[in-house]
Length: 270
Ligand SMILES: O=C[C@H](O)COP(=O)(O)O
Image (cartoon, rainbow, N blue to C red; front, side):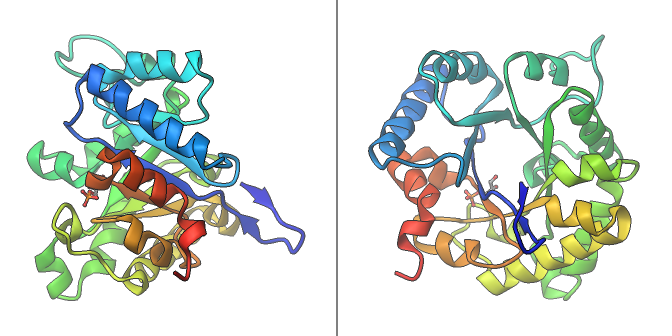
């Protein structure tokens, strides 16, 4: 993030691919290699549009080796982390381990963790703090289900999640935070929120961050949209003033499609 000459913030767009529980460690390397080749062929400028992938835990060591060995500019992160640092927490993964593997980010509170694993906002607040404790940037996922949207309570619901999950952070931490707005009804369904829906929520999230942490931190934080993003709809969503990136699920498993989303500027207005 830089400050432009007119004093406003230029937030580097972040295109993030969440592989979910897809791609074993061999498949993951192949996928990342194909993505890197495609972006290399297109002479992608990684300083202009940042790219990050979120593979399963078991892929991370291989991803680290490939990224470092081939000097790839792709960042990577984990899909979850423990709220604890070490100890008798069978099956959990410490942020310290992720940091040591070169992760830049960790997803926190993806709706699949909130629903399937019943993660509460209290736990997610602890995970957000754990990420910062270990030098990871949390990509905090928030968003409403269909019933809440139909009741017209989506903004209130999402901001309540946000407030609880960022409680106790410093303004300095909030300035680096990434928040992904993912309406649950749009995840993996082919239903995509319209660009104006994404903008409405991202503007509300930024305003809430400003109330809690101040204008400067809110202007610096990056806000993503997620839910059935594809190359065909990415440019319109990313054209919204408060949308600084996208969190892509299914389409991130296809390297050509994901690379096309990364290159959204080349088909803006098409
Ligand atoms: O983390 C990604 C989101 O859950 C969106 O997934 P999707 O692009 O398959 O709808």
